Length: 340
Image 1: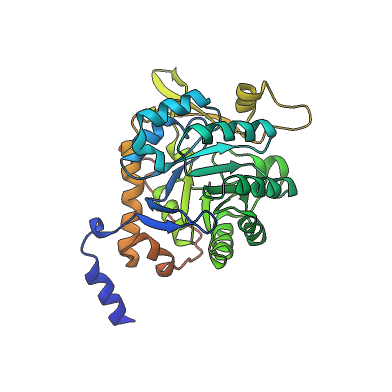
Image 2: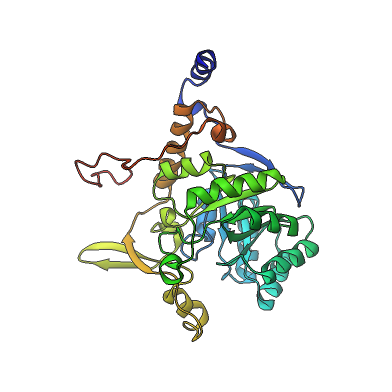
C-alpha cells in the first residue's frame, strides 16, 4: 500500500496534470464521445444555445431545452459547428414531441437525444425509448429520470445509452415535498452506476450538487456524467429574466415542473396535477466562465488528493465516510469572494 501511494504521489506533481476529459463508447449507438463529462441541465434557463457556445471551448456538454424551434436549431448549427458534438436535443414522450424531434434530426447534425420525463417508471416511457432507438439506431440516447438499478437496466436494454439518475434532489425541485417520492442521491448514483456498468451502459448523476465538492463526489460514486442546473443558473448565458431589487440584480430561476414553467410553456397547471417545482430569485452571477473554472478546478484538486491521474480513475480511489458535519462555518457560510 505504501509503495502504491508513493507511486501515485510522484505521478501527480500538479493539479494541471489531471486529465478531466474522458473518451466513452456507448453501448447501443456504438458512437464514441470525447469531452469533459459535466452537463448543463435541459432547463430553459441553463440548457441554452448561449450556454452551449460557452461550454464548447471547455469540451463540456449541454442538454438543450426542448422549447427551441427548428429554425432556431438550424441557425445555431450553421453558426456554431464546433458546438454540435457537445449538445443533445431534448424531447418529451408525446406525439408532438416525437414529430418535432424527427424534424430537428432530419435537418440538424446531432448525435445525442435526451428523452426527459420526471418519472421514468412507466411502461409508456420504456416503449418510447424503444421506438426512438428503432428510428435512430446510431444516435446516442440519454433517458430518465430513475433512481434504482433495476430500472436503469430496463432502460439500457430498451435502447438507452445513458440513464439520468435523480428524483427530487434538485435545487428547485419539490417532488419529495409534494409527492413523498424520492431517493438519496448519493445512494442512487452508487447503485445505478453499478447496474449500468454491468451492462456496458452509463449514467448521468442529475441533481443535488451544491458545490464543486459535490460534483467530485458524484464522479467518485461512479457517475459517467454529472448534470447541473442550479449551479449554472443566474449567468448571462442562461438567458434568464434579470430583475433589479433594492439596487441588486437577480435572475429568476424555476423548476421545469413549477407553476412558472407550466404557465410559460403550457398555459398553466393542469387541473389533474400540482406543481412540483419552485421559483426563486438568485443573485446575478455574470459570465459562466468563473463558475466553470471553479467546478473544474475543484474536481481536479479532488483527483490530486486521492491520487487519480485521470477522471476515470476517481471511483477506484474513492471511499465514502458518513459525517455529521462537513464544513467549519465559524465565520459563516459566505465569503467576500463569490467563488470561494
